[in-house]
Every structure is written in C-alpha cells, then in structure tokens.
Amino acid sequence: VNADLFENLRLELRRGCVVIAVLAALGTERYGYTLRKFLIERGLEIDEGTLYPLLRRLESQGLLASEWREEDKRRKRFCRRSDTGGQVLGRLLDEWRSLDASLGAILSSEGGER
Amino acid sequence: MKALDEYLDAVGTWLPAAQRADIVAEPGEDLRSEIKERESSLGRALSDDELLALLQRRGHPMWVAESYLPKRQLIGPAMLPLYFRALKVACAVLAAIFGVLMLAFTVFVKGASPELAQPRFWIWQLGLWSFAYVGLFTTIFALVERRQLHARAADACDPRAPRALPSMPTDDETRSRSWRPIWWRSRGGWLRAASWRPSSASC
Image (tube, each protein chain N blue to C red):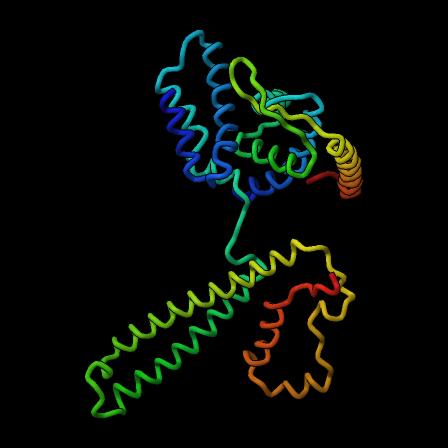
C-alpha cells in the first residue's frame, strides 16, 4: 500500500478522535505542554503544530475556556473544557460508540476485516 | 536561549501583526517547558547542538506559523474546474486569432511593416495577451470566490425559494438552443453558476 495514501487516510481517521481526546482530557485544567504529554503518555501522539491550533479553534467555538497565568515564573495558557464543550463531548462519544458498533456489525457480517 | 528567541522571532515574521505576540507565546511556552524538562532529566543545561536539534525537530518557522493560520485559497475546489475551462477556451480563442493574424501578415499581406511579417512578433503578442487573460480570469474568479465565501458565511438558504437556484430550461428552450455550439450553450450556465448567491429575500 502506498505509504502517503495510508498516512492521509490514517490522519483523516484520527482527526475526529483527537478532538474527542482533547475535550475529554480538558475536564481537568491543563496547559498546552502538560496536555500534550498527557495524551502522548496514553498512546495518542500529537504534535504541537496540531494541538495548539486545535485548542484555539475549540476555544473560538466556545468548547474550551483558557487564560494566561503565571506558574514557575513563566506565563502559561491554561485550558479547561466549558459546559458547552462537555455537552458536545457527550454527544460525540455517543456518535463514536454508535459508529464503533456499526463498524463492528459490518466487519463481522463481512467475516473479518480482511 | 538566543537560538530559541531567534526561532520564535522567525515564526512571528510569518504571522499577522495583530496576532503575532499571542500566537508566538504558545510554541514559545511549549518549547521552554520541553527544554526545562530535558534539562532536569539530564541534570545540566542543554548544549547548543541539543537545543538546535530540538528546534529543528519542530520544523521550519514558516510551517509552524502556517499551522496557526486559517486555510485560504484564491480559487476554491468548486470553482477550479470552471476556471481551467474558462482559461482553456480563452487561450484557444487567442491562439486562433493570433494564428490567423500571423498567417495573414507573414504570407498574404504584402507591404506591411517588416516587424509584422515576423512570426516571433505574433508569438510574443500571443504570450503577452495570454498572460493578461490569465491575470484577468484569475482576478475575476478570485472575486467571485470571495463573494461566494461571504454568501456561504450568511445564514443558511432555503433551496425551495425559486430565486435561489438557476431555473431549468423547458423542453422547447432546450430544443431551440441545441444548434448553438457547446461553449456558447454552456456560457450561460457558467455565468449563472459563477454569479449565484443566496438572495437576501430567501436567506
């Protein structure tokens, strides 16, 4: 399989999952670097060029709230999921579970994924 | 930390002035956190080479800045095929006109200025006119694209509103148009498609 093709499809598949993961992780207040580490430690590799623009987008959509605060003599931007973000996360999780169930049913009726 | 400051300055040069400080602060803080963590695990300050390797891993400042900017395009994917078709037709018409003129002045017209009898004069003219047409078409399509973007940003339209969509030709109209060349027939469609926007009454 062409490596670029697979990489594009993989990124496409991951895109929505990253939003769910970020919204879920920001139930606790975190700043960018600790959020990235939190996700990486749990197996979700995400680079800075993806995470920070995503945080900005989610904040502009009202799903996160953020504020710059000083910690260890450095200014850091702390983010936390908003109430709207919590509601959206719940609906996205329902959708994800429904998709997972549908995919499971499709794959089992086709006799496995290969 | 001179290399770090220079790197962040370089990222900032690719960003709009109004957002520069706010955006640059984010990768800046992330890099400082990573440097601090590495230094505490090593028990010493990072060497210049280690710092440069870390910055290199983040990528070119232009790409870092690009990831924060909204994705914009002069002509969107919906308009692009139409744009290429329009360019092809314009270039073909220009090539035909200049081909005829070149043939006329180099073969048939006697006593014209020697410059006009040179094929390279007409090839040069064709190049200039094609360049001008590409510029003109690009500008027109970019303006239409911009207009469409504004329209899309407005409230959702009601597609049932009769003015919102181009009307379908009746059977009689279709028959009466059937003799026209394809490019002529499609011209009206192009214009309608290019200039369509939700009417303020229906949206």
